[in-house]
Image (cartoon, rainbow, N blue to C red; front, side, top):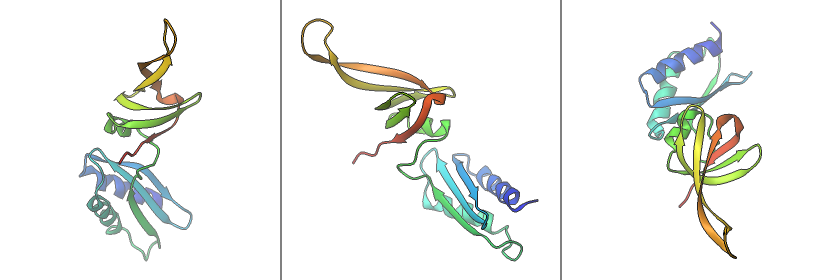
Length: 154
């Protein structure tokens, strides 16, 4: 079993006990730097990272292969990569970049195929002069999304 396969197996075992915790990214460099990025349906806490790190580290032998291990939560401004992340963020405001436009809107729904965004826009009145505020909604398939980031408001 290669080092990468061993790390992957240990990671899967570590995540089995925590059904709300899920893997976003696993990278192992040529210098055997292992970088694991996690997310959780309820938000990752420091203890989650510590537990996963210990579960992996306790079963690897540095005499067999020297390595470094980094387990972290997905960053606040990191792009969403998985459907599960979109579902977790329903009700929050996203900035979604597609092949044709950039939309800042509330994520109102997400399923396996697409997301639905909702926002208010100012548009010319259909009758008369001036503008009016209208509620817009758009369904966007994941295949059209280049990047989606949750906006942070204070």
